[in-house]
Length: 312
Image 1 (cartoon, rainbow, N blue to C red):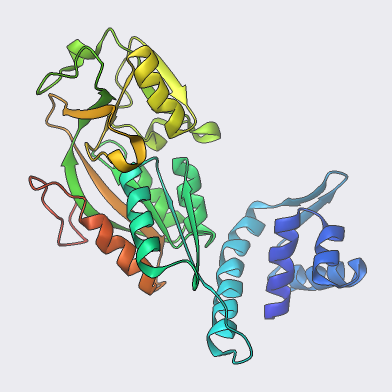
Image 2 (image 1 turned 135 degrees about the horizontal axis):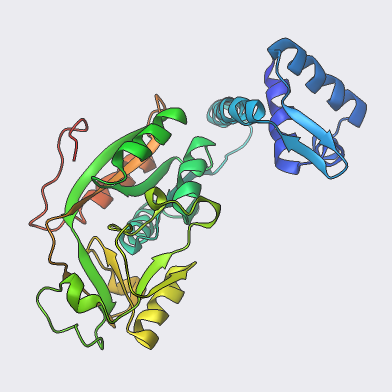
């Protein structure tokens, strides 16, 4: 197995076409096909299925590509680090569930390091995509939450995908709503008081399992539920329909404006904010700095989890 074979396989997966991949790699299509055939023979697995609609990746191929992408990326980083003929921009990418504080932390880090030397990427997206982006190396880190309900299922998924999870801090659950909402003046809100109003939830696409829900207590029966795809729509629904969502209580006026507030929910339930990364992959300088900024968002009453092996 050679690095060239790994690069060829990754490019075919990206292009979903043998012809397009061959053109991008500046090799002939027969030569590319022969190289992949030799690789499949060596591995004793079929990586790709050729069809009239293009290239399909087999389950074994997906597993192989998760490692191949890491090797190709490591090779690229080594070349950049030891190359003396050019100055290349360092890259940092993070994925997260729809947390404005995680986006704000990213902005602070980008301002601190500057964007002349670094190439940044941030993906505020679905839970499944957060996991997939870290698994494939598209993002170095993924920010999400665990609680007593989803912890066992998600930890199993992390393990199966070669990911390590580390907690940052725990927090109570709050109701996030517009300051014009009829309940906005209360010091604490119960589920009974929320019953007349629509509960807002982020759409999870094909992975619309309760375990992938970004909102805690997702298995409760809600009289009204509205799903949205992005944070801007969610905020508009809070204003226009007196909707609400359940969150960590950490809000960012710089990003969302001052029209919204977070009020504690009358429950003993907790949620844990943490991050995932590829197992045994060292954190970059930017990754370490980003996590340090994230930890600053814990509220005074929250207890920072010092031991990564602590459980909920």
